[in-house]
Amino acid sequence: MDAETGHPIGDPLKLIGVVYSVAISPDNTRVACGRKDGTIQIWDLNTGRTVGKWFAGHQDTVLAVAFSPDGSRIVSGSRDKTVRVWDAATGQPVGQHMTGGSVLSVTFSPDGTRIASGNGEGAIQLWKADASQAVGPPMTGHAGNVYSLAFSPDGTRIVSGGQDKTVRLWNADTGQPAGPPLVGHRWTVATVAFSPDGKRVASGSGDRTVRLWSAEPGPLVGQSLTPPGWSPQQPGWVANVKVAVSPDGRWIASGGDGIALWDPTTGQAIGTPITGYGAFVALSRDGKRIAAIGDGKVQVLDVGTGRAVGAPVENWEVRSVAFSPDGTRIASGGDDKTVRLWDVATGRQIGDAMTGHSSDVKGVAFSPDGTRIASGSLDGMRLWDVTTGRQIGSPMASTGTETRGVESVAFSPDGTRIASDEVLVWGNRIRLWDTATGKPVGRPMTAKTVMSDPGLFKPDMSMAFSPDGKRIASNMWDRTVRLWDVATGAPVGAPLRGPTADVTSVAFSPDGNFLVSGSEDGTVRLWLNYPDAASALCAKLSTNMSRRLWQAWVSPYIDYVEACPGLQIKKEYEW
Image (tube, rainbow, N blue to C red; front, side):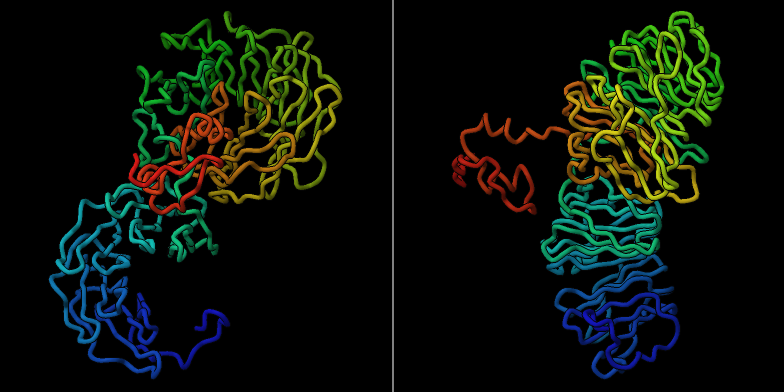
């Protein structure tokens, strides 16, 4: 077909048998077809006739074919677990065949010296094209079939697409991942390709979408933190990880299948996980206590010892919890449509339940001064007086058929605003409300997203104000984390991608420089949130780095940027 008009070129090729794979030669004169019977046919695109004899050698279906950059060779991958190289003119095999699992995808490097193959076990193998030898160990990470591969134009990276709905980038020299998986597709990724400048990747999926991705390193900081004992292969179990950051920023608490503490600098677990709890996590303001839910009860735990503090709160219907600023009380919201206040020391309820919601209470939050509680439900958001237990003002709710209620609530650091995270039929919307008047303030923060797994339960929604109150972080249905400007309601930067399952919790570090997320893939991730990092760094430097340093320290495939205007560029021979 003509790529510009979409019209067919010439008559259809009269193929014999079932064809499973095709590739066009670099000069656009021939097409190679891999067949079910294990043979390869070459066709002349000008005449529509076959060229030469069929290539025979595979013992099963040829699932992938590709031409070398100069068009002189063809590489093929088969269900017979072999990779074979052929002379494109004669059809004779070149060297020995290579073995490595049922081969679903193959491609040549831009210089024609290497071949990459992807198999049905989620592995990618590099081969020497002229010696039929493996180069390094397999690149592993995909779960299931690797359906598509492509080298970057400079040959330094490989992009892959697979059955696990992810797109992955790899360092072609080391075989290591070049950043986190790119997630967003809702079905198998069937094809991938680099842009001519190598800065973007295109992917096509069975979800009937084509997506464009940045091929440059993303903002993920360090490795994801995986709770001990968590295995993505555990059948029938999903880790619903909640996160909280200590007041001094020295550790992170996560709750999934147990409570774990982490050192954000090293990514290592601190101590032994506390088992038996973990559905929800709330941290006291002084960082000494954690509230967790498990086995139908809310229990306060001592962070230092991991031991229970006071008696548990028996309540099978709890959906959300929050500590009061002084750490003496806990607010809970539940499926019984109520908000309740509890004494941390005794585990007993304080006063009567706060009633008024007509549906499950999904989120609760204390005001910074501890005098009010905000709660979110299907019928909107309500404000309560902590002392009297009475509702303050009218419910704060958005109107219209598109809203599906409030999932998460948060007070601004100064207590003058409340943010509500509303679930809509087409995505998410965060609204700011004036705590004094109960009226909406400013422009809503909206994002049209698609659920990662339609038909399944939607993920828990979470959001958090930055310590300075200028930004809000929120999770989205498409497994991303987003930052918003509170003053304008506009998104800050691109969505943060990395988790391979729904994100369920977000939190800022005390200094606001980092953001933490928890996901149903069982991981905790750290993200950089430091908008003035470049200015702070430039103030300490006397020169810009040289292009040589840029390639060594930043990336050889990211265009050089004079990061500090006004400073000289370091000479190439200076380190």
